Image (cartoon, rainbow, N blue to C red):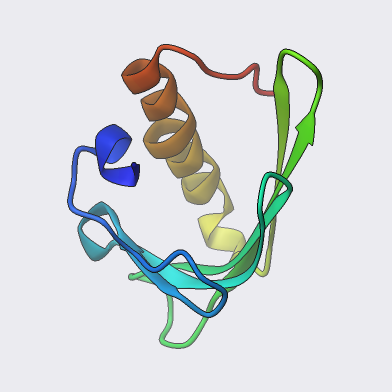
Length: 108
């Protein structure tokens, strides 16, 4: 599914402790917690970050009837990389999902 909206090869082991590598290896990490329909917690990093440095990204999904609310929280992002990460999530995830599947979200 990830390859559908990134248009690039993706490696995803969708299990706790499973690894992922996306966007031609520019993003990689592992899944710390997976709760179906509720939450994804990842150790997530850009390949350009210092070796061994990961942020913790949490995606919380809340059912709102005909919509699903997604809350993204990222902790441990190097200060110099915050804007790049925010722009990357917007462009390569949220905008790409909307363009590929025809639906998306309001970003606040």
